[in-house]
Image (cartoon, rainbow, N blue to C red; front, side, top):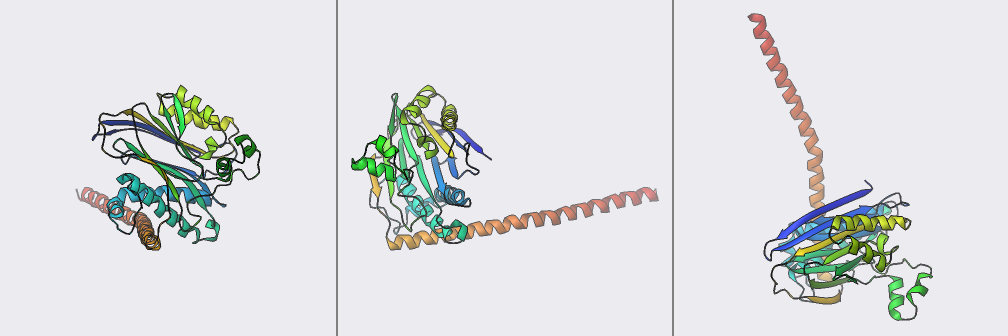
Length: 346
């Protein structure tokens, strides 16, 4: 499928928080495959956008793996990860922000291990920008050049800084944005999941308020449309997150559609009350130690084992279904034969 669309509304009872979200991914007009992945889970308030890279569709594998592993950590391993003294982060993040960063680390390990399992997976990786809400706090983490923006009070604010060669040159002050745009290799990223054994993750947590709209996107949008163009679309469609995602993707395709493009939009419609959870300024989380890596490997192995067991069950189900069908047919034949026999006797 070339286009995948999500849309949902969620109510957080603890603070009477109403959220409307939408997400869409599109193959674009040039590529043969879509290596982007998106995951929106309104029950977990978890939102993920990934942009995979690697030949022979390996990028698609990497981005999907990141989404799958992170979602699995939130839906099945949240307590285990939160209470594991080995999986420590040297900062007092909000609880769900802490879980998000740890889950991204585990996803990095999973992709890294998988990239070494087959020659056609070698070198695969993915960017990620992910957000998870905890009461009135939105936790945002990212690696690579997929971005998060905040539209608030008719302004658009970047919430992430690209991990790319271009961004580093701009930050150095040696080149202007216009000069950097003319350089070769401007799309080279300096961080991604799955490329190395460990990865640094950028994190921040901020308090949401009614009217806020958070935009998450792959570089298929922000690499071809300016922040000003993105702002214009969000402003014009601010009352409909579905329209925001559709129109931003259409704009990317109108600019040539040279890349896959993925957009998620999260609208904070109502917030009644304020939590005591603290905000957290942008920070780069350093890589984990060797003990944590070993523990992450154990978690990855357990996920792999679960998948293998699931595949076995899925393969057995059709066999059992076939046997069951044969049994039913046999019983029906016997019943029909008995009825015919009774009719014959009568």
